[in-house]
Image 1 (cartoon, rainbow, N blue to C red):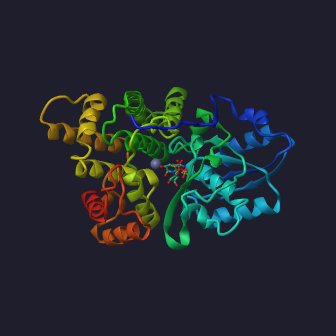
Image 2: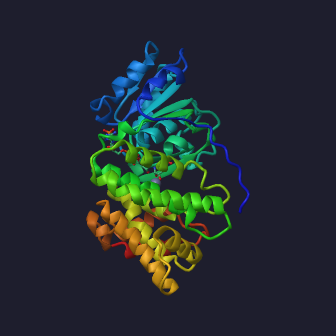
Image 3: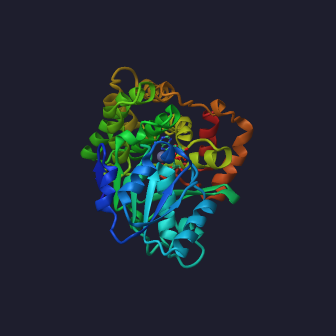
Length: 385
Ligand code: NZQ
Ligand code: ZN
């Protein structure tokens, strides 16, 4: 096992009717900014509950944070925070709203060009406003981690930063708040959480048995509940299990002491930035190709994945690996998420620009061995057509 430090300071308040807990969680004297996305939180009554729980606190609102939040929009929120001397941020939404709120928290008191927050991957952040979360979509794990992904629309750059100062102080996880999600977002959530586990689990063995078995448990849970969540009417238990699985998938626990990959995510960012694909759609398309093309470096873990997650124990090594990758692809497809670029209208002519964008963004040595270079990334896009 590799050396590690593990610290996760986010208080999780989980369950039905927990939005009212905001009353206790947000300081009574806070000047609060509620940040949200489009209309979903207003329409399904979540915002009304939030406003009521905040009682007489001085509060402001900033709506319109888009999916794949943009630097341009978020800077408007930063200006509002500065003008109104806001001292507490409350994100009400999914990964995009939470990530956007983290950026606003870091940018509020940032001296200099706030894009440096992203350009430095968070290293330049030395202070941040406190933030809390009311989660409405299970997928990213942003509710319990210190990462954030922001897109600069003007340059088609999807960039990320991470800094312990932007861990949410608390996150309210009420599974009933996800009842109004459309099937596409539910499926995206399952695929995103699944791929988060894979990015931390499917590298090479370091005899990290606890992390491996936690990861395999999360994968099996997602395989079990995924179809239920997407294809059946909303029920509390499957939504609760998805919500906790997605948070656990990216809260640092299974990352402790193991190598990490993240090439699928980073190669996928260009597909969102240039073609507007949903984050999870990029993962569904790229993960099977990544695993197939990198099978030699990942062989031991692929065989472990085949056996322990998909119960495949017969046939040659390559046959077992092929079947495990096929099962993964079929799982994503069964949720209604296409695993081919063609399914999103993207053809071979797009690849030169995608590879050039990776180069511009310095994404030239990715993966747990730093061996996903531009040539390999090109092959991954080609295999994904
Ligand atoms: O804008 P509204 O109207 O609220 O609609 C949203 C949005 O259109 C809708 N939605 C959310 N909750 C709903 C709902 N609709 C009905 N009922 C509800 N309860 O869902 C749509 C998608 O929301 P979004 O927040 O964009 O989805 P998600 O949670 O998948 O977040 C994706 C973003 O997170 C980043 C991605 O790159 C992407 O930008 N990620 C963040 C990570 C992190 N911070 O750790 C890790 C991930 O790998 C990921 O990169
Ligand atoms: Zn993701």
